[in-house]
Image (tube, rainbow, N blue to C red; front, top):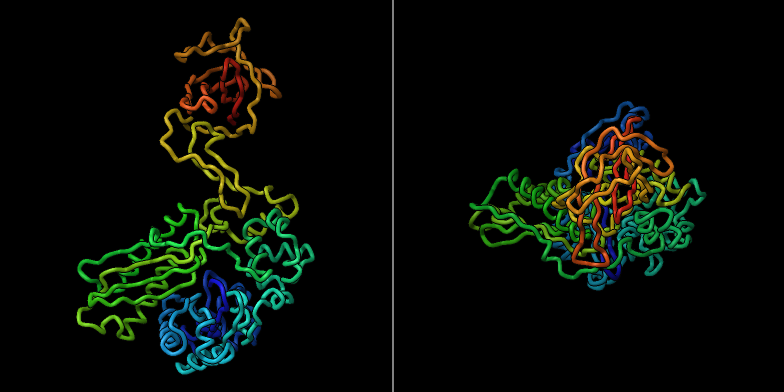
Length: 508
C-alpha cells in the first residue's frame, strides 16, 4: 500500500450474502471442493474456512452447499465500493470481494482521527445493509487481520501486535507445518529467526512471510516508477454493449499482461481496470493483485464490476452507449519473489507436493529439492537448469533458439555433472581421432569410460561439430559429439575436445 497507515474494511461472509441464501441457514460457499466462506449457523455446527467439503458435510449434514460465483460477489460488492468512495474516501483498492484497503493518512485527518475514520467506514457500509468491520495498521496484512476484531494497531507496532498469533495466520500451509514441527508456533518466534537462515531454509516464500512477521511489507520496494510500458488495452469497433465479449477480451489482455510482467521479472501489487465509454467517460476500479491473480481471476473481477456498473446504470448515463476500450494498468511493480508453479507440469503445484518438498528441504537443505527449467543450448546439460523448489530462476538462461547443431532426440537418461574421461579406440588399439572435416581416422571398436569399464562398439552416429563463440577467444569452444552404441546394450554420448575423448551422458 506504500508508506503510511492503512485502513482495511471487511464485510464478513460476503460470499454467503452474495449467494442469495437465507442468513439463518447453515450455508457453505465452496470452490474446488473446499469451503471458502460459511454462515454463522454453519460455524456453530463446526464448519470452518479451508475445510474439505466432505468433512464439512460430516459435521453438518443439513449444510446447504453453494458453488462460489466470483462475478456475483463482485456485483454485490461494487455498490459498496462506490458508496465508500463517494462518502468516505476517494480512492481505494479491492483486495477481494468483501475486503477493501486504502491509505488512511489523508482521510483520517479529514474525519478527525483514525477511530473516527474507521467508524465512518463501518457506518457507510451499514447504510447499504451490510455488516462491516474496520482495522488500521502500518501494513495491509496487519490491518486486514485487525479488521476481524475492529482493532486499530498503534503506529510502528505491527510486529509486536502480530507476535502472539499462531504462524498459521501467515496463510502458508506448508510453511506453517514446517515451523510447527520445528517448535516455532507463533509469529513472534518466527520473526526472531535470523533473516539469512530463513532465506537459506525456506526460500523466497519464507523470506516474504518473515518480512511480514517483522512488520515489514512482504515484497521489496518497487524498482520501477513507470508502468505504462506494461499497460495492455483492447479496443472495440464499433462500441461493445454486451458483457461476454468484454469479459473474453479481459482474459486475453490479462494473459498478455502476465506475459509482459514475466519477461520483465516483475509482479504488480495492484491492478487498475478501466473502460472508456462511447460518450467519452472513463470508469476505473483498483484490485489488489500481488502476483496471485490468474488471467481468469482478473476477467471474473472485471466482469463482476461491469455487471454492477450496468445494473446501476453507470454505463448508460451518457448519450452514446457501449465500451470502446478496455485497459489493464499494473501499479507498484516489484521483483518477482518466486511463487511456485508447475513442478510436474500442472498449472498449480498440488498442496501435498508442496508440503512434502518443504519437509525434505527442512531436513536436507533448501537445494535438496529442485525443479527443472528448460532453455536453449546444443548439449543436454546446457538445456536444463535445476532451480530450488519455491524459487524463481534468476540465473543466466540461454535463449530458446534456434540452435543449429542441437542434439536431437532421443535425449540421454543420465547427464554427468562433470564429463568422464573416456577412450575410443579402433581394432588396432589406436585412439580414434576426428579431422577438421569431421572424418573419423578409423572405425571405432572399443570404448572405455572411467568408472564404467570397457565395452565393444556395436554402432555409432556422428560426429557432429560444435563451434561456439568463435568471436571470443577466452570463451570459444570447438568440439565434436558422437553417439556410441555398445555391444552390452548401453549407449553413450561422447565429446572430443583438443584430441581427447569424454563421456558427456549415458542413454538407458
